[in-house]
Length: 385
Length: 134
Image (cartoon, rainbow over all chains, first blue to last red):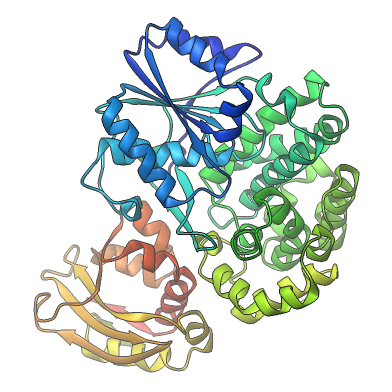
């Protein structure tokens, strides 16, 4: 027995107008700090006000959000008493929104209790809506929230099915202003979600269907969206592909590439999409011996000869990465000296080893395996063990 | 063949856990004891419980309890007898079993989720015991 869960979707250019139909009395908008600074959140506030709602904005979310930021947001929510909570932004903003929503609904819980084993029914005080402004995280569809314990601290990989939004609003106009590098990083994250979920031990026919479509769209349209951010067709395609990939991994799990990426992100402060994207070819090579038949499901999308050979499959990702400016190795990311990498390696291995992302990985990585993958990814050498 | 649940079964489990290098690696920083609670269904008519003292990749002690309340532990992993059979046969994944409601865990879930590889290795160990059921 397994499940396939996700939010209801409203999509298309101008779909933020849907917010005006929600009949809320008090809305709390949780968003990235830079959206407030640029005024980009104004359109959302306007639509919420059209619904008759008083709108309070908690626009304090930074990248790699800390638990302390969530607690600030919870205090605002308890003061405002919203009947609608809206997350707006990238993965950080939407993850923070989920945690604020849960702790507002259940003041008896701590953030550390947002695990699948806690029985909770949310939605008694407020409805939850998520609006992604980037195309990659998939957080608008999932029940996971990634928070950081403290500056430089461990990433908490929290999850509960009740954290899934009632609606995800997919307006492809919102990511239209993303710069090329952010488009590449977030799109790479989406491709990682799709490919890691299709090779997951928990993959299922429904997650596979979304993963395959996401891979097809991202291979075709991500380079266009990176090259020309004003290419509306490519933007729309990549935006929906990211949500499809989110629906896929949200119901099948990611894998060792995300475990390695979370470790690199938290220890050496590499942005999430860049980190997991860098590891994807190495994760494919590592997992291939244990997941040949799973990867073969991508044959209709990538071609039989590509998916039947680990090196061919990883090479196809490396070729895509080269076209969008994604790093081919940790060294290529820049800003990390060999000494800093060597010094951080034990901690990187420990954090990857303790990541929930390896739970459903098709090949169970030992700590020695993780160290060798990190070293391969540093050097830019294919994984051959 | 070794009957499950029994003291003989948990003795073999302890011995095999302590020979499992992959478990030792995965659980090298683990500190915490477990009660595995087998709830009756099918041919098992009364609950059975095992106590396991797991520490830094080794099993320091294993005991079948006379009753589920004989000892307390940091964690309790419980499920129906039929689900334990599914787990030992590798038909049920230990973590997916939790998320799907076939098993319940009492204890610090955050801590356990950092050691899912160790949990898999414990199940892998259990599959190596030639087990017969009630």
